[in-house]
Length: 293
Image (cartoon, rainbow, N blue to C red):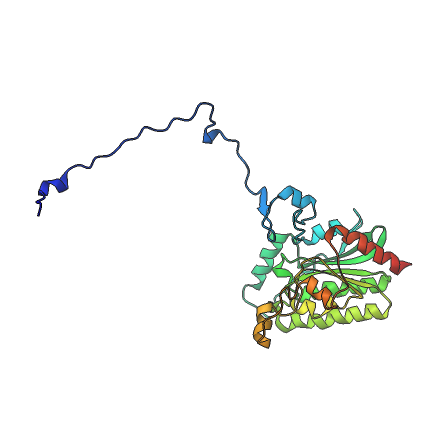
């Protein structure tokens, strides 16, 4: 057996020192590359293609590759649908209280108001679409997921009452996660209140058009959203009551592919038509024209 001397363990290790690579002639140093700002591009949620954000904005937030419809804010929707300068907002200053003293509810309302610039999860008003009068209700999913509390229900009800009093059509763009749990039974009561306002408008001979956008779920779906004389939807919108997992657990069955999408509902007769965003204003104006004439 070979013998090792103890002093071998304490010898200095040898290192190989390499010369620093010199840049090739004509090469541009990394630090001298032009700075590219962050946030100019995004990857489509559906097709995965890279999209220039400015192109997406100019295309009304629809992916130019696959047609995926991104969500719009309430004011983006109003700018898209209403004739320029004609929209007048109503009941803009209504804001939620905390009737059940739910912990942290006031703070959450304030945070959402600062984040979105809205007082509540819906904007209501009236104006013209290709010169034709209409009351318009637009929900905004950024504000507590568009949940329906007392103020949301009150604003929608007042919008229907205005449309009934003026004998003009009303168009409602839905986008909601359902009833607002922080208001408990008071939130659920808005389902009956808004539905009653829809019934009165119908009895007076008024036209009610619903446009279901992504997502439309819960108590909103179970009340005014599905009561329209004409029910339109945007492509790919999630529309339903309970979520897919909850439904599967309740019935003990696997639900079909595409369940609770606009396309599934159209196939099964729950909605009248799917309208791409670029054609929505023209479609609405044609429906209004038929009603007025």
